[in-house]
Length: 77
Image 1 (cartoon, rainbow, N blue to C red):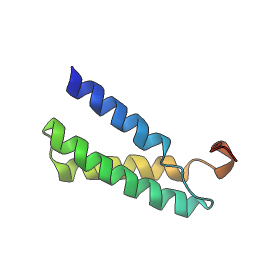
Image 2: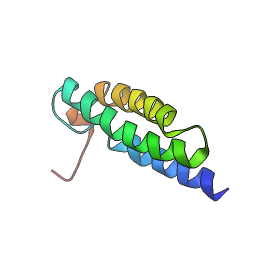
Image 3: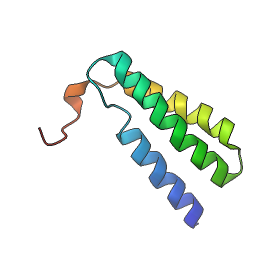
Image 4: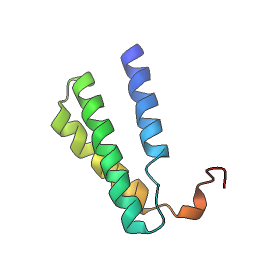
């Protein structure tokens, strides 16, 4: 139960920060990097393996970062 909750929270945090940057390419790159790091950690914790987790997280972060615009995020500016 706690492992699933931690995984869900980490995934939510990863996806929320995946859209950092002004150009779609930059957001895709930073999203993929954040996703790969988070995915590796989650993959190692859940037993699917850090490599598989990094691939899944990197793909999800890259797609999320590329599909958002910088005006969709309000970081207090």
